[in-house]
Image 1 (cartoon, helix red, strand yellow):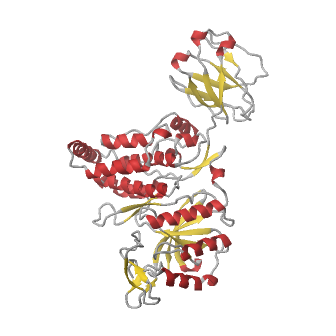
Image 2: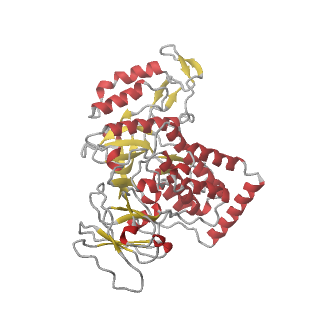
Image 3: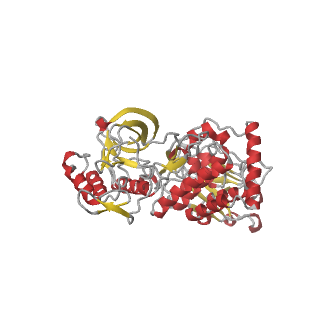
Length: 516
């Protein structure tokens, strides 16, 4: 049985077309009689339970308020899910595919004037680890997830909730994307994607994020693994469309947001995380915009950001210091400008999702304008040359979300004048001391950090070169020893003891340093 073609469209509840043959009330265009369907839902309330009173209440509330066949969630018994196949896993959950034997009640039977189930339907299962005890945050985000999936077909639809009787973990039952994630899609289709197609893909992503932000929500974990593709594939005549998944459902279900955005760790894929978040600032709409900029780059390159590098502390520092992926040679200037504004170091200078949406719409609508047309034609010409030369073939690199230690920045000011250094030869240094790290290397206009990860000692600062070269060498040493001048007399080096910052409980090594 096929699903009604208009069922994924937002229902216009003000457009009535006929009366319900069961109760006589006028029906909206969707044929959904809220009065009768509410009674039908309520008649079955005592036949099921999720095992959580709060979750039962949430499901029942969505059904009592439903205005169409798609704007509610339901309890889906685990025994109704067949042929479960593992797809992927992260640190706090896994994704599987399955066949939901009943399927959603999306089919309108003209003969019986009633809604019927679609029958066996392929679905995706998002298993939430350690979800025996659900937090208030989980319920809030689940509600936001299914509300957004109703409002936009650019957000993966949420059918309902199930529970594994063996592990006792809850599972979110969602729409299945037959083309997989954006990562998988690009691996198969990148060389055939024209610039016009690329613009349409990012426009779909932006439309979905726009719906999320306008609902006063944030995604907080945008990366190409959470962008899902539906359709026939890049070479098919059937149009592909893009939907955002995993909204908020990306950590332990019993833990609140503060656990993953506090002074210790955050959760996500490092190259997509905004620099201010890597330094402990809250996840918000602006950090979603940064992630969008990275997705724009992925679509231009077919690769993961910084895929050639280890996802370690050094990369984290470099991102915080402004490192971004290299722009591909075929990127149109109008697209590059928008992308770079999204990943601006200053979150206040990043555009809103509405601005990005309008800019992309203008680019797509005005392809006939000479300036934009010439840019896109030149970009497409270069793209074809790169494909022919096998320069832009995607690499087999796949990133998953993980815990990332936040870089703590608790500034301490050092006035070097008190150590008898002439005023003309010094400037103030601002740096934070936290967390042990190994040597990170040193060159002109770079910072060298060398720490002992086993001790708990204060630090000395060696000035290997003049401040004009903005090179600092920060080393850990034991203050119980007397100050000694460096034996190397070729450079003017002085040992300086930093002022103790009582707000920093464990001063070990420098994580950020800047010349003021």
